[in-house]
Image 1 (cartoon, rainbow, N blue to C red):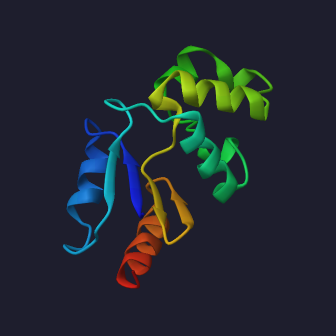
Image 2 (tube, rainbow, N blue to C red; image 1 turned 90 degrees about the horizontal axis):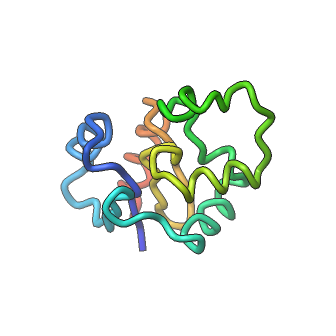
Amino acid sequence: MNKIYYLASCDTCRKIIKGLPANHNLAFHDIKQDPITVDELEKMVELSGSYEALFSKKAQLYKSLNLKNQALTEADFKKYILEHYTFLSRPVFIINGKIYIGNSQQNIHQVHLALAHV
């Protein structure tokens, strides 16, 4: 099943979702209302290659906890992502077994291409 992990209160996520093709057929998963599970995170890591790839260094908590001055390990990235939804870089799309992480213009373009071939 193709899926998007997003934050409903995030303006960027809402804008990206609004711009998706009408027939996208994605399952929506609001990570604040329904936190990601260990199994879901493990599936994402399997596709992305690391917890760090899924970790948002733009999160305000990242700055307020002064994490940028710490040497974070993969275990740390996993712990923080599971502890608080804000640490998951978003949105995360899983389409046809491939993962697309974040809101860069290039990434969203790749999502649109992938959805055109579903």
